[in-house]
Image (cartoon, rainbow, N blue to C red; front, side, top):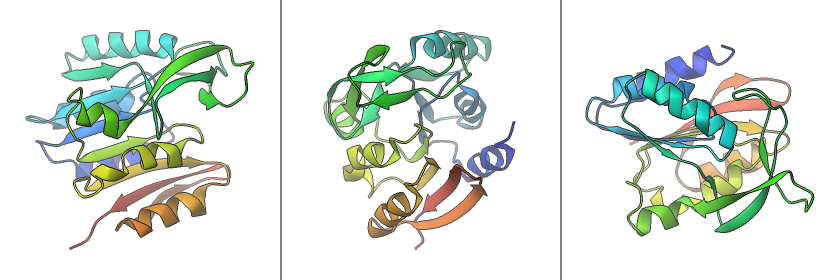
Length: 193
């Protein structure tokens, strides 16, 4: 796995009673690993791709994990949106929210704040975000929770690195770069003091 340093960092920063949001859970690698650390906590895995949800459900069952699967995308709005599928096997490819009308499918999108405020989900302590370019939208949709969120692990795709980091700094987070690749950067945002 090319993200071993990220997985190790996430596991080292989790507390046993945390609520962990795995946003862009794919087939559940992070969800399953983190659920083993959370003896009193909870994992909520967000994954809108139907084929990935099937594989994620199987992985949750195989690992006897207490993971809530939310088969939706998170953003800073609510509705239906196009969803581009790049790769036809679970866990492979890069699936992403699309603004184009010719998308292969449509998925439900919710702001994290909406799901929390209407009582559908517990508020998170820690986030892991891997959403292929929609990072800022996901963060804006959870901004009202920032006073309670301790840590954010975020894979930033494309040219959004500075914008995402600035947004997090403006909201009281310090930034540590864990992985820096040509087309993506994985950061750890945390609060000090």
